[in-house]
Length: 187
Image (tube, rainbow, N blue to C red; front, top):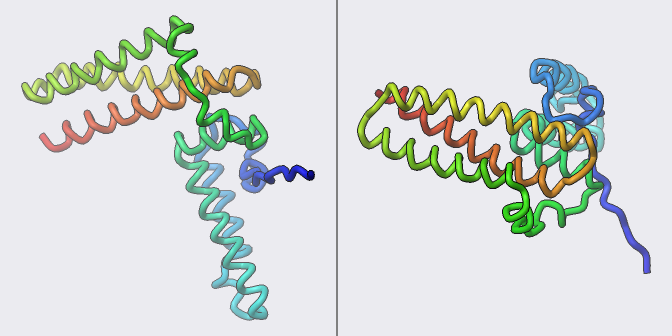
C-alpha cells in the first residue's frame, strides 16, 4: 500500500514573499504578481506553439488563484494552516468543542462577539450612528488582536486547532466591521 502525499503549492515562494506568515505586504504581493504575469501571460506568448500557449494559460490561471488566495485575509489564514500542517485537512474540520469548553480566553472572545452582534442589531434598529461608530472601533480592534493571535500561533507551529478557531472568529469580526461600514455609508 503506497501513500501519496498531496503537494501543496507554496505561493509565498512563488510570489517571493519569504516565509509563510499571516501578515504580508500586500503591495509587494501585487508587484510580484504583476511581474510574473508580464513574463508568463498568454497575451505575451502568442508567438509560441499551441502547447506553450496552453501551458502559459494554465500557469496564469494558477497565479491568479494564488494571488486571490494570498490577498484575502481569511483565505490566506486557511491556506497557512494547510501549509503548516502539511495538508492535514482534519485540522480544518476538527471538532472545536474542546476549545470552546477549555480555553477561557476563547470563551471570553465568543461572549464579546455575541454581545457585539446583539448591540449592532440594536443600534442599527435605532439608527444610533454614534454608538455604531464606537462599535466599529471595537470590532476593528478585535480584528487586529485576533490577527496577531493567529500569527503568533502560526509562528509557534503549535496548537493549530486553536489557530483555526481564531480564524473563524476573525472572519466573524471582519463581517461585523463590514456590516457596520455598509450601514454607515448608506446613511
